[in-house]
Image (cartoon, rainbow, N blue to C red):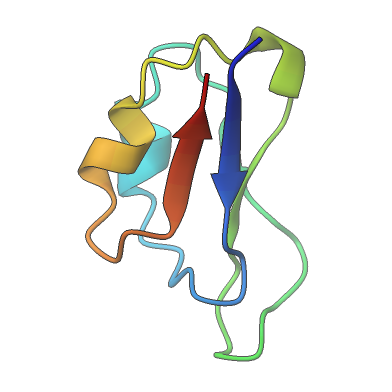
Length: 67
């Protein structure tokens, strides 16, 4: 089972990963990280296919995909 892992404390909430996700399962969190941003997070880990589109799009390399 694939798993996308977000380093929420480093995420700047640019939403590029959200736009790149073909499953549409990424959203911005309601909480704010230590940098003052709403970090991206998965809404349903079980629907993640491990395509890594989100990780490839992330300009800050805060997403890793485990397969």
